[in-house]
Image (cartoon, rainbow, N blue to C red; front, side, top):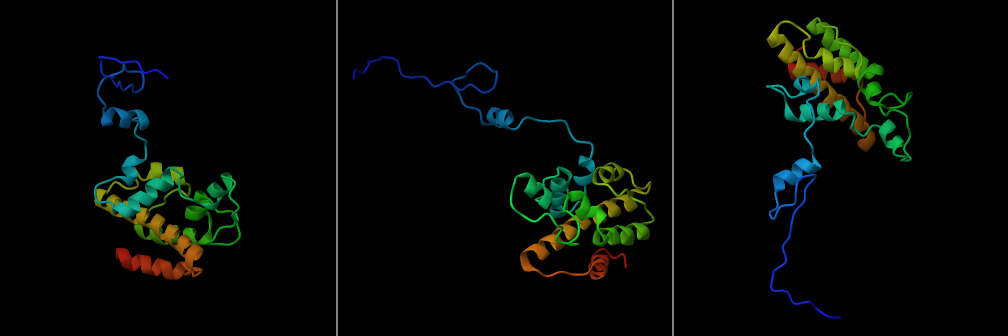
Length: 185
């Protein structure tokens, strides 16, 4: 094997996307190439608003993107998990089912919406659009947004509690606990 002796040092060029190669590396350009900026979704203000509680907003953001590891999603990846909901043990678990379609969730929705004199829709996508303007009173609206966002976390925690510790709490006691947290009793 022969080595070619060169008087010129090698030059490294960085090519990111369709831009001409450059002799320097840019972390920012690489990040933007790997994670392109997309249009803002219509529901972002319903989740990322001033006064939000970060862990509640995070769960709601993951839910809105339909990325919670519900059993219907796990099964779509061909994982061998039961499809039955951990909360009701009678229907298939999905985002819509967890947050709206089974009695535990419905009781929560009814309990808090009736106290706020609001009638939110019972569909996830519809709720996100509705949350942009559920009430004309901005203080009332902000309090209701915080309550709705925390509701999703409470349901998700109850579901995971049943999954990981095999213990459960009836909807009525959770409603009372929740109302104490937000002073809606």
